[in-house]
Length: 102
Length: 203
Image (cartoon, rainbow over all chains, first blue to last red; front, side, top):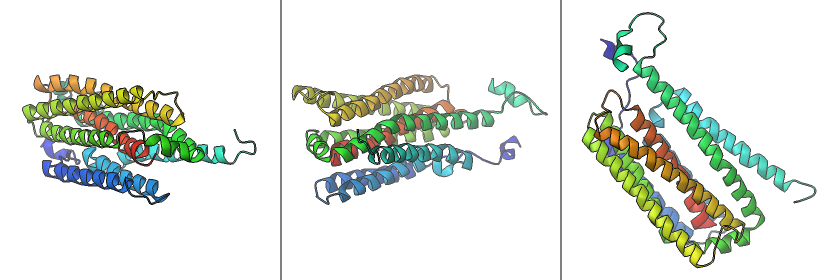
């Protein structure tokens, strides 16, 4: 009886899902290395960061089970990301808008 | 301890159920991972600013790094994340032997990562490149060094968890430490996913 009372049964990810995610990560790694040999100018870093973020998203969602977590865990996971953007964004704004550059 | 908690079915009890303990551990772990992100965040901020200020120096310096070795290490770390994830699922299904072996493979991969990094650092020193060569290499050694420290801490944590797994301390009912160790290891992978392109690929 007690097995059915708690509503949120722990989700167990299948081995197959992990393998698919792993293959995707390897493909994306290959793609990002390959693209780094081509010259797109300023676009190179944009592409590299987009690919890295897709990879990071896959790791967080599946390897770290974020996809199957409740909203409070999502909050704990996303709040540092917001702080990180604040940290980097504000530091850049500060550094590049000084009247007397250091 | 778990058995004692099971017996307290009634009323307002100070003891926590295993589910509550698991939930609290998980939230605490994610909170800690958040502080880790902020720890590396300062260095990423420094990277962003100095790259914007000295783009030529970053472009020139990053070509000194061995792209192939970085790529190999990326593959090693991603594979170790896969084995760790498989280990977590295995213990959640009560397969202690498979879980232990998977954690062992994860540890071996982590050590392999360290070996590759050792040769990389060695090659840099042989070319007289040190942390004080320029700002790019200051950031390179600081960021990869701090990451390496996290790999070593992860290896120590996983080492303990592996021994406990082989001793049969975890099963399908109680696998919290394996899962938390896994989360930490995936974070190490996560940080490297950003370090690799920023340092090796685009500079």
